[in-house]
Length: 105
Image (cartoon, rainbow, N blue to C red; front, side, top):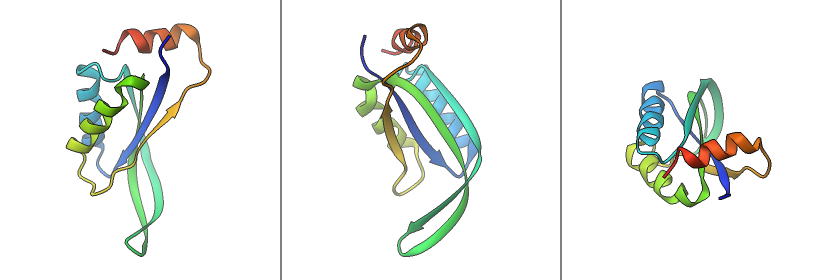
């Protein structure tokens, strides 16, 4: 079975996160999108410590689709430098991981 990953991004507007998640599911680039938040993010940006309320989007997909997913997120994301990271899923329920693989391109 192909390697499955979890992709993470954040944005300060829930509707942006919902639109990205729905679009990627409809394009079969991800099997599912989970939205959490609001969360509080504290980070340094351009020399200043920022404190912002954001929404977290968790997505599951095949590792081979990551480049297309990253491209789509960047295209739709309003941030100058959005968080887009992928985490390898080393272990998981075989049935669930199979479902992720079958629901994506």
